[in-house]
Length: 404
Image (cartoon, rainbow, N blue to C red; front, side, top):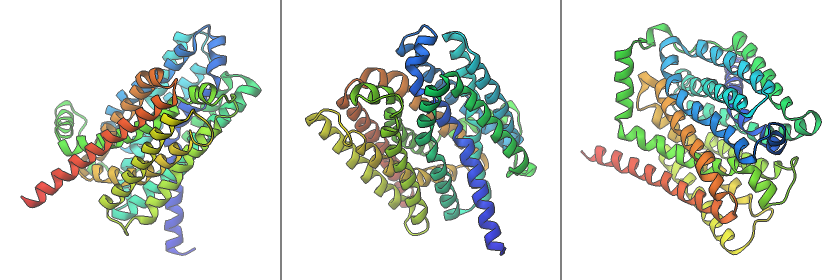
């Protein structure tokens, strides 16, 4: 095996492991969605109350993401990843054994508090190890592998529900997290040497937090990513309503929404990797927004004129996901490069905002607008318009600075 082949193999292994860590979030969200009606019956709750278990997961997820990155900058990426996997495994056992809605909400919150460690540390590790366009290619590779999870998660969840009941879904999450722990323990190397770590003390930590919070550029780029993703996640969070109510499908047919959507994510990430080094990041983002705006406009027009139906209800989601996934690696790397000494913290704060916006989309927007196709289409359009405004603000700022 040549040196280049060994390097390629090492890159593929790292990308696969980081993608596996990132899939904890989608699996914890998407696998149990087909079981909402069964869980409501089992726990003597309403479907709306069961939907709040999604919010109970997402809000702690986004809150703890504020701290995961600072911990990885101080103690290294690997120890934080391993600790997060242990907590997630214990929480999944608790979900599987929950006998009431409050118990389930508690353990879902514990899952959310721990699931983000791999996602945050993984983004920072890519930039630790790889420079320039190579980092974009690796991040795109991670996104492609990661993109499979939301496509297969509801399918796995639907069949587990049919065969063994809803508790088996959390048993599956327990085994998945335990497998990831074993893989990371034996194969994941540390990427942040002690000489580059930040002191874990109150004053330096507060200085770094204020530095990032005070950066307008950081805020604009992070908001662009969060709003773009929230427009897509709105449909993921509304999947039970879309599948059961709007399209009249059954519990094992969630693939009608998830497979096209995640296929778009994977294809967009593939395109991002292909254009790395050939197109500038700004040109790549411009193309991505053109695709997203086109999809959102078609979605809005269709739902104004026609009732929800296959394939037209899911086609705009797929096209939108292509543009979103094409855009995300370039914007993420621009954001990480703003603070090269605090990449973990930068990834943490960006991930926290993205998760918080997703939680708002799931807990506030979805319950009120998911009952109609036009409501979901309008929500997508407003959110992506906000993302574009943030990107445009960032571009204007950098142009002014270059002329100064």
